[in-house]
Image (cartoon, rainbow, N blue to C red; front, side, top):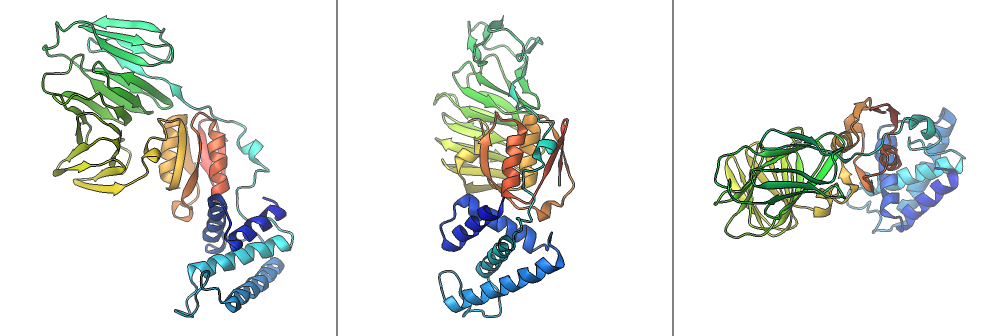
Length: 384
């Protein structure tokens, strides 16, 4: 970011007309550069910096603008607002003396750092039928792939996998499950025999029988999936994962049950679901998310759109930590991250980018909202 751009950014911030992205840029600079003293200026610049900083703080005190700064309650304590104003003044001072931002989102060396860009994932999965046959859905033809034990399996031209019942002759027989597994960098959409639609995220294993029994419709999930369940009041739809069981009649919800995640998350978009853990159960409403940590079920209000960003073809981050973002990018792009910086020194990140862009587009967005740099080397991304 050049001097004139920096001046406009700080002026917008001080005038109270900055966009959310501009506010985040200033906050990130304050937290990462000033509070940690990661200077890139020489001693002369530091001295000039300090003079400008003190002059701006004194000016703000004299203004007496109580909406921006209140020094009367605790005059010896610099409030966060004062710190932001001071930091902003410091930034402006650097701009005035002809410097640049001392943060690491400059794009001058991106062409070199991103030379080995990584393509996004796509519709990739392996289907293992109940009779033991294995079909690679990535390269398989469209049309009917199998017709076995009263179940037809068809692949549509858009990659959708459709299961439908052809007869009920084997409905009451004991049988193994069909299993769909998505690899790193894979996703798939499935229509179950009862009409339920399921979207599978990367690194997910999903199993279901040829025929649901007379009592319920039970499936198993390890990973992440979004469900739009076909309504059937006489046959509850049950999703089992390692730490919980979710029971519904007909609804839209997302389950994140990756073993590598801190907790199992169920987010409801429509209807009502009952979440059962090891030591109890709770019912959640639309706009709520249950999180199971160990044996405890916690319910919080969330923005459901953030939970299903992957299903909608996006990466959407809202005050999200770098470790959480790295997990998502690793699964989708099939890369490994090596972090050379300390996680606790990195800010949270906010922003959005299409999921089907190359990984460099996501990394650029992260660099623009935080004090961080990425280096792509094959399937390894180094974070500094």
